Image: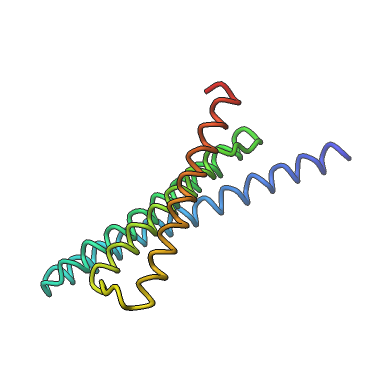
Length: 146
């Protein structure tokens, strides 16, 4: 009886991970498809900056979803979590924000504007976060021997 209950719970866990994985994969596919449609729409309107910004933002978001999917699949298969995929997701997220923030700030470049100083402060914090995550990845790889 105890073994049957354990088997049911294991199967349920696997089904949950698979369902979550399908949702993430579907969400990424829809994200990329809508990005393509919106990109073509902006391209036809001659709004090239919006095309570049949209592609940059959404493709990096899709890469984050792919990394989350990889982590889910690996956990479902091996039953253990590693820190590296989460660090990669954090790096992609921080770099994505840096790139998008920089691209948006180009249009509003005014040294006298207090919002510009806020953007600079956010960029500084994001840069520190990238360095910290990269260092954590290196330390993690050295600790695991990979």
